[in-house]
Amino acid sequence: MHATHEHRFRPQTPGSLTLHQFVESLRRWTPEMRQIAQIALTRSEAERQRYLQQFHSGHHDRAGGTFDSFVRWAYSDPRLDFVPALQADLDRPDADYEGALEHEADVLVQMRGEGKTPGQRVRD
Image (cartoon, rainbow, N blue to C red; front, side):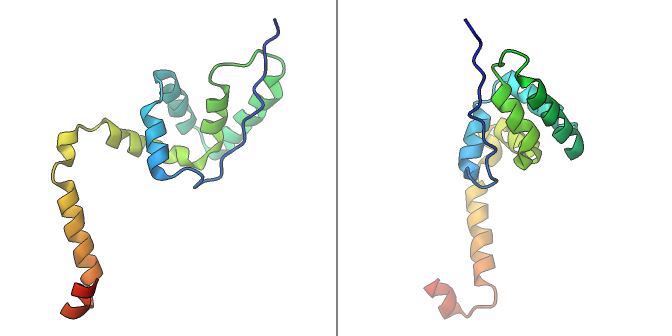
């Protein structure tokens, strides 16, 4: 039996997933995926590009790996740089967010009300 190569990978343009979808995908990352992302984050942009070129050139000489598509994503997508901060937020307990929505609502009301008369604020 021949190993099949995965050629379906297409780099996603930033913004093709909503932030919510991206965060939900982070929740499903396996420990191996987290490790791949950590390694990619330690490399400069130029190092990532060189690695990708080497990865693609050697791809036909070896059997496809389980995480090939993820490796391609991790080394090519600029959103990777936001992963540590998002992951840290995902790892926080729900108690850390208690009352956060009320505070956000107060801030939004104050920001939207700046420079407006009381009548304009009521209409908003």
